[in-house]
Amino acid sequence: MIVVLKSNVPEEKKEQLTEWLKEMGLGVHVSNGSYHTVLGLIGDTSRLDMDLIASLDIVESVKRVSETFKCCSRMFHPEDTEIRIGDAKIGNGSFVLIAGPCSVETEEQIVETARAVKASGAHLLRGGAFKPRTSPYDFQGLHEKGIELLKTARKETGLPIVTEIMSRADLPLFEDIDVLQVGARNMQNFDLLKELGHFGKPVLLKRGLANTLKELLMSAEYILANGNGNVILCERGIRTFSDYLRNTLDLSAVPMLHELTHLPVVVDPSHATGISRMVPPMALAAAACGADGIMVEVHNDPLHAKCDGAQSLRPEEFDALAKKIRAVREAIK
Ligand code: PEP
Ligand code: MN
Image 1 (cartoon, rainbow, N blue to C red):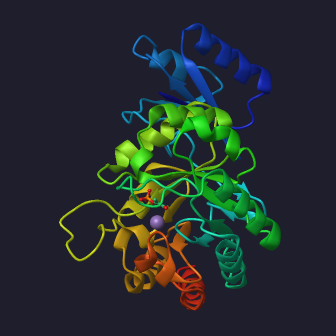
Image 2: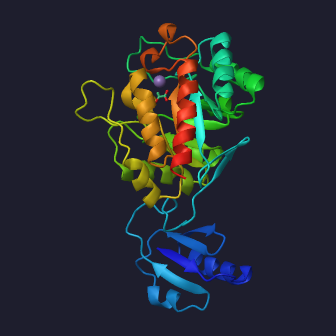
Image 3: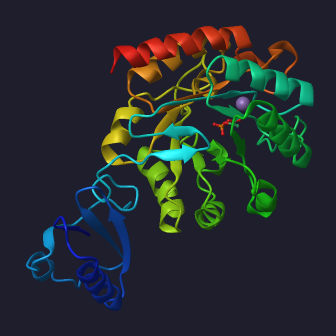
């Protein structure tokens, strides 16, 4: 249930109402917007008298929310969430370009790639230190050493870093990471999601290979309900009947998620297509349909990449794409 308060309600009255609702055994999430305060009630609201609450002089309206995600819901938080990461902002009209290799391999590789993508206008650097690989015999990432190399690249370029966390046991290594990525395969690792709620750092949550938008939002809900509102959703393609492409990029997820939630939505055309020449057209389409950011794999030497070389852009290809993305953003303003 969602309770929208009238504007300019004194704090004291808001607190009285919140306390009373808590005494009824409900969790209360307070969202302070610029016009209205919205209370999201969590728990069994079946015994609550909606009419009684609606009759209170400080209450504008009461709505039952059929959706099971509450904190993520646009109904609960009508304004877009904007997340700050260093100097970058994402959401509420601000757009970010996230670029970098699939995995961190060497200092030369990550620093050279970071310098190149920064020069092309990237706002954040990506790179995996812990890699979720289908085969246990494939390169699994440099782990702690990879995290250190990402920090070196951040120091060299000033770009904040995005890197994947696979297990909550690794969290101590992520204290100084700017954005923690939860990969498609871990989207429903609920213990990890809860822990990231407490950890508090921005999270980039990727849609699972075969997950619905509702399931994606329920996973985000785990993070928000545990105290962390800084969640970025990522559409990265889903399993369908695609034969020539790695996945099917569900771009309609972008405007639908924007209707359902206030959280920013980014698109990853690299994992969606698996083929570098397919990445620019899909990245432009993502920008055109209103994505709040695009995450692209870029490698300084894709032919020798340890992971996902076939879908990685060369720095000069990324440079050309970044210019076109800016033009599309300008065109849809
Ligand atoms: C990645 O971004 O490196 C990755 C492994 O992506 P996904 O989880 O979407 O497959
Ligand atoms: Mn990859």
